[in-house]
Image 1 (cartoon, rainbow, N blue to C red):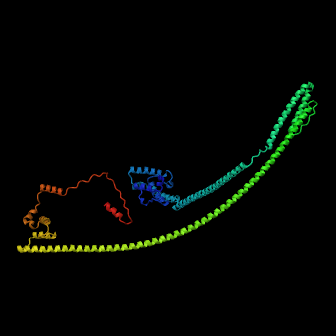
Image 2 (image 1 turned 180 degrees about the horizontal axis):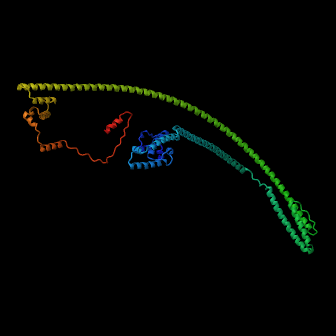
Image 3 (image 1 turned 90 degrees about the horizontal axis):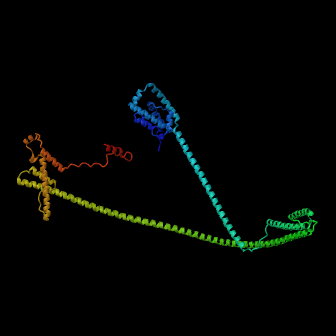
Length: 572
């Protein structure tokens, strides 16, 4: 819905309001358009009237209303409402208000109005510029829309490419996964088929750790033996040499530990006691055991390595054999696939040739069907033409027969009418001759009129003897008598009403007739009753179900088809 600012931005509604109050005489020059020229014309015309109502009005107000600024149109409407209410209270017209104004302000306002008009022309842009700006804005909006659509299309294309790449990547990953699964299955089958061998020795780090543990155990055993030996020596030797022995044994223990950690053979410690030989024997035995243990480990490791190399050589040979078998199997599959491809290609060529031959047959069939349809259509057209000719000939024959029958009926009708008229003339003449022969005088006027009425009504003047059945003749005679009586009564009534013949008044009656008759209420009441019986009064129309309301009609038609004339006739 349009708001108040947009409705009043053209100035036409302001002019209509002022015209309703009799202040805008040139309202016919206003324009309903929303162009710049229409707005300029309307606002320059209402400027004088607004100033006549003493409302502050200038180019800024007009421009704000034209630009549809919020509150500008409502403010001017409120000022017009106050000014027009004040005018209505004073009961003044526009001419009276102009005459009451002093001449000096009027001259000043004419000058200001010219200045106002020029300034308003400068402020209001031309319609060409406005149209150009709207055109530029429209094309810019279209360009922006197209750019957005292009960017969107590009993004969609990129998304499609990315999606396609993602699909390719997923298919590649799926393919690699399937290949890896197949390889894992093959490796699992190889592992299941291989010979179980003893577990290879542990790594150097783990071996070193066990040796260190073993050395620590041996050192602890040596320390235990030495401690037990020292205890036995303390019990046998005097107490003066205990300190010296302790120091010497401690030094020997440290040296022994260092030698074991550095993997050096134990050096004999020169003890001046009786246990030196025992200690040297123990150390020597330990060194020999360690060397023997190392040798055994070397020999066992060498055997294990040789067994492992032999097993690896065996597995490598087996793997090569499997690879050769797989390659051979793949080559056979490739040959089989090549043969299948050749067969498929041959089948495809056969299908293609069959398809071409079938299409050729279809084309020939369609051409044949088309020719058959054309022949059938030509035959149907020929038969339709023959049938149409037969129908036309039949219609012409029927028309000739109808025309002949109509001609015969018309001839018989005319013949009967002429015969009846001639017979009535002869009867009328014979009747007059008979009357003159019998009375030897002229026929009375009344009787002549009666016979003439019979002649005009085509009723017979003589009663003929009818040789048909009695009932039919009696009914016909009765009908003729009734017609005669009716014509006689009508002729008598006409004579009575026209006062001719027997009813012609005499001279005395004419003199009396000039005197107006007296009122006879009884005769008037009887006549009124007779009129009410013969022509009963119409009943009053029923009351309408709906209250009266105006009806609007719309006349539609082409130009100059008489719509205005029809409306004027309906109004009249």
